Image (cartoon, rainbow, N blue to C red; front, side, top):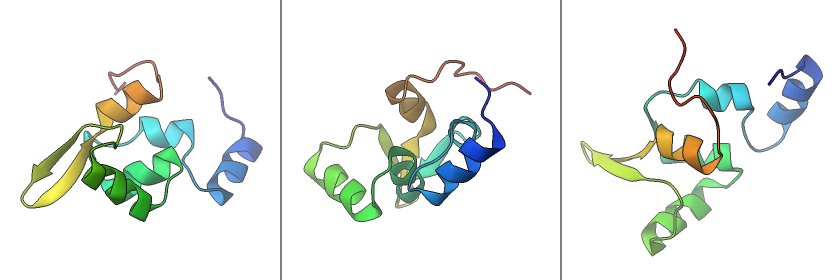
Length: 85
């Protein structure tokens, strides 16, 4: 899928992330980044985690909650879970 520059610029002005940004995320991300990818505010994301309804897999590492990027890709149905070099 090719994203033109105008679409990418428009996407950056709205809440959310472009497909290219989502595909370039590291293995784990913080909750704020995951919320941005889903078009949610961070308060709603943390509320959903607290209520057990957040749609992504999370882990706790060193006292910080992290989101598994692969679960974000699965939810968004993004092909190519293996990143190209």
